[in-house]
Length: 258
Image (cartoon, rainbow, N blue to C red; front, side, top):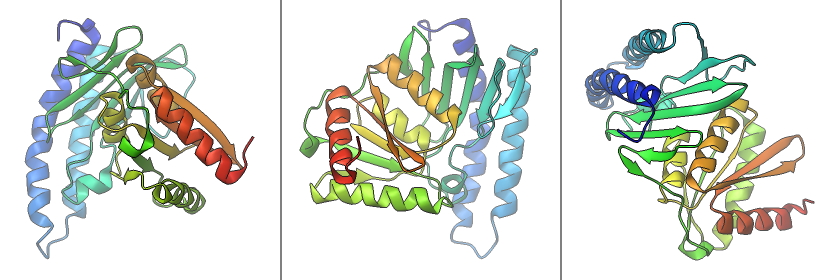
């Protein structure tokens, strides 16, 4: 990974080493899906082992920095980690999940890496250095029409109002026969956007760490993040410039947003 800074090279090396252990655990979890044995305890133990490994790694790289969870927000320099970005997928033996690590400096996420050990895919982003999947530079799609685009959507399972809004938004695009997906993994979807595999990712969130992460990734891969206010919620549209504008206007028209 010669195009990367020493920081990203070190993160990539260590995160892949930890990922090898996850592969063994994931194989066992897959087997448990068709078993009468309960998998919850095994899943939690696997996640705890991984979290311990990641903490050790980050303390070696920058021991002076605190480590916070992805759902927390701090205004100082720190590591931000999402050990398994979709624990539900992981617990059901579905391979759409990633180990997600960000470095926040000057109140902004300036470095982000996420790794799917099952697919052996590493996505790396650093401010001013672009975005990469493994060793290959990536960019968002250049498609300009929605009939050849793929849209993906995400909201948290237990956020009823967010889910209701998202369901209504999905209906808007289904009426236009737009291809839609829901992977359940933020990292999977934003990786697909960054590498041009899908054209639009729409989500609702109040998590500033997620917004900062997505903003960094899009800025380094040529994408844009449109934001619409709806009641007390914000609708985020991650896309290339063409499809993002179309999606924004379709939603605005349906909800008569200004």
